[in-house]
Length: 236
Image (cartoon, rainbow, N blue to C red):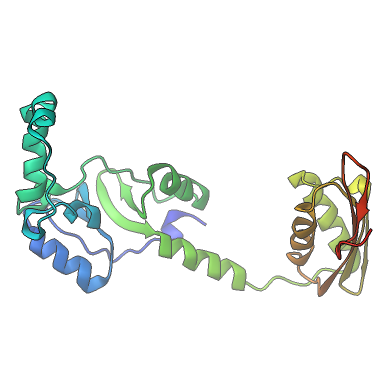
């Protein structure tokens, strides 16, 4: 899936000349945490979000620093903080350094941007023009759509082949220490593991294969240092 497949196209926006009252009212009405800011030509020029309104003089949360810190910071820093807490225009409080993605950006790229920049939404642009926005909710909807997509059940041999391929690709367990069998969709896991965290990972790997109806765990954990063995019940 790409950004163009999951993005919200009918995007609520504000302009730099709108008042912060208008921006806050829009945020509350659509229950969003942020809004793109566009100019008269539809060009993306910023983002305004809830965090931009946390330190405001109206609610008594404007930042006030000791005089000696203000002296060290210089008049520019003090002036900038004053504008953020007192200005009534969106253009003065918005974030201008906006990270964006193109319409053909993959889901993996979008999620990477969200994680790296710690943002909940990523505008989608063509050049400077805003054409949509991808939010975390859009990513969740994509997850749901993909999970609900029907996948034909595999036969036993195909299940076995796919499970072995998955284990080789992921690297958390070696097929050489395992004996995996499949009978009418029931996967039986037998063999040795050396970390209890491998047990649920192996079960998940099997359960995610279309056609698997049940996973039977006969794995034995071998403690690497003592050589002591335990099954899933904790019995030696």
